[in-house]
Image (cartoon, rainbow, N blue to C red; front, side, top):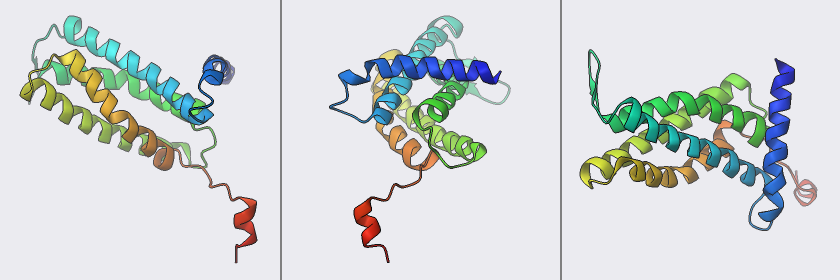
Length: 175
């Protein structure tokens, strides 16, 4: 199983890094990997959202014993259960490889940031679909664009925190 993991990780890194020279002037390698992995996971999420909203849920309310969920929110939840583990794997093993935090701490923090992003997604979807009367799929796309920056900085500085590199100039003045 470990061999499969290393092959998948190596293939993903090789594929993503192949395109990095085109963006080297604009962003760091880590930021590019985050954009590529997050972008791929986001495209998957939007595709899954479209399929689940239109074809699985058929734009119908989801009635559970204790609550009724609107179809655009139910589609969001379905997407979450698929893209959460994929996003965590990509973040941990492809983007933020140098984190010193324990895996369960990373998972908990990643989950917390993801839940915060879910609340933002929920808020913006409710706003765009129910108050502004936009179509659900374009609403999901706009919402995703608004949440990406929050997600990147939260994951980088909170979920997958890495040791701070001290420069030689800082070492001279260290008391």
